[in-house]
Image (tube, rainbow, N blue to C red):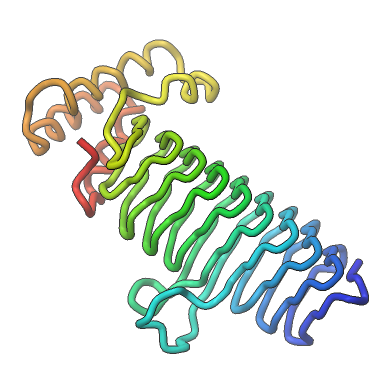
Length: 256
């Protein structure tokens, strides 16, 4: 299953059915799980652990040293879960000692062509980064979030679950769950209604989320006051608990 023109280090651990295309280079301390397909001209550097049933397309760079001038060769890691798709020219870098030393990608993630996942990013499940979307270091992206083409996210930002970043958005603050943002700098433009419907959110849940959005953006309340109001609303609406958890971990204020 390994093309004879590929270079696989003796210190790499590949499951028996892993496929590796011609001219790919897999370094030491790379672990790749069953069912994963590595296309031609891919470079994977360790320490990197890749789960099962992933597909990595040609010219992707996975697990390379972080683009951080403070990086001094420390032992840092990249972990990639299961059933992810990493398209052409995507770049994913390991973590740094200034954070947890770990970049992590969950399950069922799609990284389209030319996307960039910088050091110490944490990407949860079912996330989509469209062509040329880029994450600065230490960014956290929640479940089911979608970043449209050429969207850019500043270091340390948090993108909430089910959020949607429109094409070319420039995000320098946290984006709450469910919220759709657009522009440079990004501004809120309602909730990700269509995406939520596709994921099975019913009319009651959608109305609750819209009410929370109005409290956050249309009520004239200060941010702290809006957070208290939404927390009270979450007692009777489970879908709003994503807001309260998000606010508790907010690091750069929010797009507002």
